[in-house]
Image 1 (cartoon, rainbow, N blue to C red):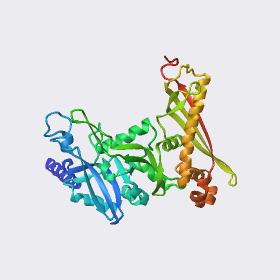
Image 2 (image 1 turned 90 degrees about the vertical axis):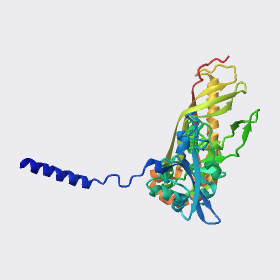
Image 3 (image 1 turned 120 degrees about the vertical axis):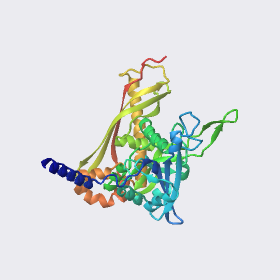
Image 4 (image 1 turned 180 degrees about the vertical axis):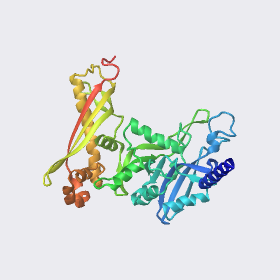
Length: 404
């Protein structure tokens, strides 16, 4: 009798436990999803509509199914990605209208980059930012880029060495940031943080679309394809609106001044023979400080760069303590200083405090900011004088000191 009661009790517990488990009530099978690799936004001025471009991975081509047995490349000559577009009165409505042209439900969590046309960036990005913050599928780690040229062309472009355009743009950005320092690789979350803080403006990377030209070999076959875009430079903002461009060297100066440079290089002239010397920067330190009182204050910026000689055309020996090495350090520091001053002048011209000098005052001296904050963008920042100090240290001259 006791065994029957125990068995009945266990059965009732099992039934009650099972009824409390919801299971996969809203599951979505992977084969029914369209994986979005990159997304681009534009604005149709004439019709007053947002336009969205989505680049989708083509699983048939990427998987190699139905191919010639090579195991790498598309199946049946199909492209490994597909670009679709739609329009709407709001960015979200435009995204929902993509369903009309796609046989699969779009999945946005794997999106790598978000592109903005220059037209839309100058109009304002607040609606796009609001969408990315509210919608649960979007990731704020996407890399934002302002496009100089035809947005559709870059969304449909092939990148050599990469399977899809979205992956190509993502790796293009990362490689350029770590090797050259001419592109401000920042994720969308960083831009939103900057936008939410007083006394600081956004700086986003620039991607210039190039005309596609095929190069033919001697036998008439296709020998190569020109790169679809040139990366380098940046877009300066005031609030959520773009106000102008900065070139690659100016952007490198911003990276030096804000501590966001990795490896970068420039060429200087040897004081001994006039030959070219290539210097590579591989680490640096940068800091800003505020001193003085409410009536007499100043901002000081200190930048210290460390590098090495990667190419030297002269015949002298580059020892650590030689006067030639000290002279090269001074010339390298002058080159870096010129690039910092160049981007500072450009930012003041556009009244865009991309360095965050105003935010430094806001954090360090709130009372002073209360007095000058309302006049910062229009009156104070464009005329601001910065006490800038730049030092350069050559740590080594490569693997040799005495050239052949």
